[in-house]
Length: 129
Image (cartoon, rainbow, N blue to C red):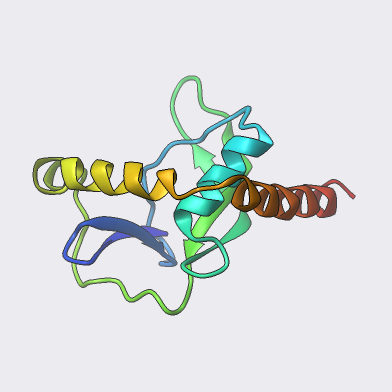
């Protein structure tokens, strides 16, 4: 995978690219409500899908290759050309993005959480068999 810009660099998205890598965070111990809130925010089922992927966790405390749930963009999202930069994003877009995030999450209601929790429960049940 590779991280590329979208909407003029306002958002990063992952694209499949053999031989490339993308830095990110591996979150452990995420409860169902937090996973449901992430699904709401990412627009799961519309903008993004969730897939189980093997990711590499490098470094002295890394686990090597581990399985993780990854939000991947739907085909309707069209990345911009070029490379996405965290440093550029922080300088140009961070404050606006955080304000948008707060507004979006204020629209998240109990039925949204319940629906996404059910999706995660189904997903996890299918993965455990």
